[in-house]
Image (tube, rainbow, N blue to C red; front, side):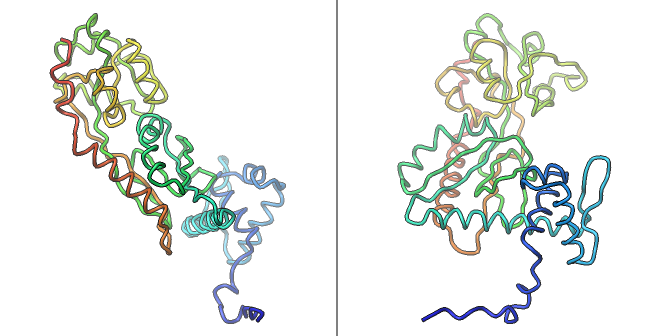
Length: 324
């Protein structure tokens, strides 16, 4: 028997939906902040994007974007609308991807920062894949704000709480900062008290410019925040960890990401009683209206791995192995 055609009049809300092309142009324009960038992404002309935006503005009877020297910005009501449109387009894209994979392995798309991927997620991921061979985890790395990400993801991981329509955010891993160095470096550059770090090469992170001053202040070194603390600066934590392991200086960063380096003795945590606690690593994951077993399994697995790190803690690590 043929399926009866749906009568648009039976769903008045759906009958009032704006054109999909206009929604895509609006979403790209707001996300990129530029009609030109939106046009390049959608492979259409600048004037075509402008026309689609005008179509949407006529549909709602109000202006949606304001134009300035730095590009386009949504009005307050349009910003709220954008968040819902983006979440809906992401759900459609992921649903289409899932439909195309019918009978195949379920793909989960994860986006996290490079250091979190290299130092924490990837080294642990094999246990999840072995236990769940029908789920394929694809990891992409980025330091871009989640608001600027073009592709849809099931899970985003960052070093701060996040929010997005249609998603839920949970803290899964402590972010406790500590100072570390290689045993060979400490042998030739003794550190007997926290203030001695001022006399040695400090390795900085561009993403945590206040880490060293805050750690020194926590250690009781007066005036550390007012001093100019020079030293090499690295874009990613995993690069500063490599530098510390190569005897280039003393690194500072999240102890949860270098648990293996510390437990193996490749790096030594200086003054374990001195730490700086941050907000923690957070996971923003889709909150689908229908149950998604694969996503639930991954979220639970991540939280369990994070809880293991929290239970073990870091303050006792390497206390007896420090070279002073």
